[in-house]
Figure 1 (tube, each protein chain N blue to C red):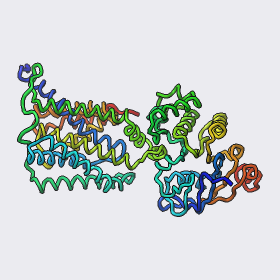
Figure 2 (cartoon, rainbow over the protein chains, first blue to last red):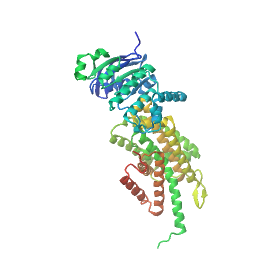
Figure 3 (cartoon, rainbow over the protein chains, first blue to last red):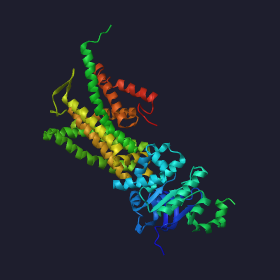
Figure 4 (cartoon, rainbow over the protein chains, first blue to last red):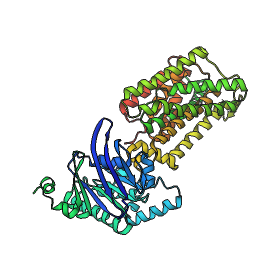
Length: 239
Length: 293
């Protein structure tokens, strides 16, 4: 049995007085792609933010890579190898593409290592190299999402979390983004936790998935099992 | 017909040069305010009073030790503690809260400082009995006190250093990231509260340095902070938060208007031209003279 990379135990979390998650248990194993699906307002984004330490945690524990990060500040979680690409990408629009990438490597103090990572990321996304001195705010939606992913890779995370990477993108670009995510797992062995509205596509991409609703997990399992789950079909696949 | 005499011309020339000196000091004094506003998104209404209290500290230490450099160093050390302490004890708890709460808390801090000064020092102005460079310098046709040349040079150099800090250093880049998107900055692994505290403290230290320079050319009284606070706000608004260059340029404008105003108008009327300039600018260019976006 493999040691899980990320383990959530009985997570109750929210924002101040506003409770969103009511007892979430979840496991992500090394090398997996795990999807979290569920309707709007189910708590998917809150779940990812909780893993990063950006919410109020009332109860439960966050274990990552054999460490208990429950009380660790967000910046230290990044150092531990967690990266979240937030909903809406969280780019710094008035900073240049290169400055955004450098900020992705903020936790790395060795300058030569940062240069090395920059080179690798530019090889993966040559478009960004061409635009390195442009303001991030001037990029197209697809380019901006690529920048967000590239920036997430700059710290060489052990677990990369993506919150709705397809939001606001044309279907063709969405396919490209999913292609990149697949490539990251195959070529760089990065474990991925994905939150998505595109249920069908994410179930094709992911090994396993969790379905959450009203802040609770209502179903979980292998992607192909979930695809056939009657309830899920009814709610999300509109059949 | 009114013919300008040689006296008038040289008076205007001296007025403009003095205005540029004042302007560079105003720019330096405004930088701390702009930095704190940009990164912490809080309006520090105690800014002017921090400058005023710093001036008193410089004055007192210089008077008791007889050494202006000890006065500078000890006030910097004291206000580093003060800045970090005010951040951790007060500002930290009102960040992201409603503007009214932030205004009340910083105005309150300013009032405490001002009344502390009134109680301790009374209302009469105090000036250093001996300044750093108390002799005149001739630059071309103009005669200027060496203190003023020193003040202008140091102010401009510090402004350039702040520009370098915010554009070229890792900490500066991180603070710009925090200014743009606090939560995304957390996600980059930036220790956001630390950036807040560092920025607030740097802002206070710039203000303390401005106070030290001010004491080389002018007196301090408990109301110095009211005037400086207002001037700094006008400069930040005119500069449109358009970076250090915008602050320096609007500092020069306000300094020259101030200086010429005090030559041609009564002491209480001298602020009229700069307020008119301010209102006109905000009217026609609400984002400031050099504003972006």
